[in-house]
Structure formats: structure tokens, C-alpha cells
Image 1: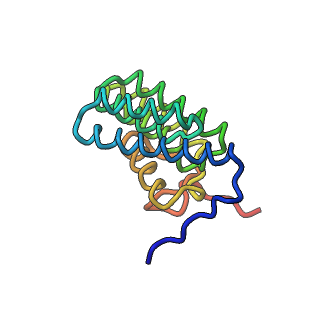
Image 2 (image 1 turned 90 degrees about the vertical axis):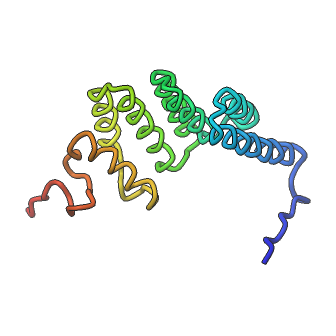
Image 3 (image 1 turned 180 degrees about the horizontal axis):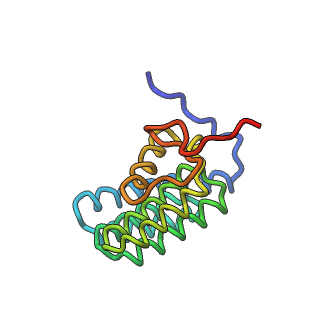
Length: 171
């Protein structure tokens, strides 16, 4: 069954322009995804940059760009791009699950670069702030796997194999 069409008659000219820019940005992102899958990284970066220029409030475009840098083994650029994504996400009240993806990707970048200490610090620092109960069902296991592969979970966090890592005293 086809989806009902949006009623655009109530939108102001500015809102219509913003909507068109968001749609164009998503199209550029999809173009970048196709380049990424074909391992045409320079073209993917150009497409993601175009998406960011059209919709600078969408942190997903920065995360995609970070994924390209990770594949290119440009670890520091990947981590910096992840941090930019976190800043954009926080500024625009992105869901925590999206912000957690940036933290995990930064940790994975350090891990891929062989800097396990930095990876552990990245995972641990971010996990202390993580609220696993607020993560989407898809994001929580990824964050937990990232943590489990490098260090034990911080006290008080939920893990797949236990109720909590610390017991609360009943007083």
C-alpha cells in the first residue's frame, strides 16, 4: 500500500526550502554510500561533504565520513570527525543511540590503528556516560561488544550476561 503524500500546502517558503535541502542532503548521502561500497573513498567524501553543506545539523553525514576515514586508515581524522559528529548531535539533540555510535566508531578507530590503550579509554570514558536503557535495541549490543572486546564494563552498567555488574545494598 503506497504511503500517503505529505501535505506541503501548510509549509512556509522557508520550510519548503529547508525540506528540499534535507531531501537533497539525503540523496547526496545515498550517493556517498554507493561510492563507499565501491571503495571510491574520495568520491564518497565529496558526496558526504555535499550532504553536510546542505544539512549541517545531521550528524549521520559526519559519521559516514568518519567511516570512510576509518577504511582509509586515517585514524586521527576519523576520531576528530567522530568528535565533530558528537558535537553536532548534542547541539541538535540527536538521540543518544546516534551519539553512542560516534563514540564506538572512535574507539574502533583507535583499536584498528593498534592503539589499544586509547581505544580502552575511549570506550570506558563514553561507557561511563552511557545509559544502556536509552539505547535503541540495535545500538546497545554494538556498544556492549565494543566494550567487551577491550575492557570490563564500568560498575553499574548492564551487560548481556548479568543483571548489573554491581549490587545495590538494601538499606
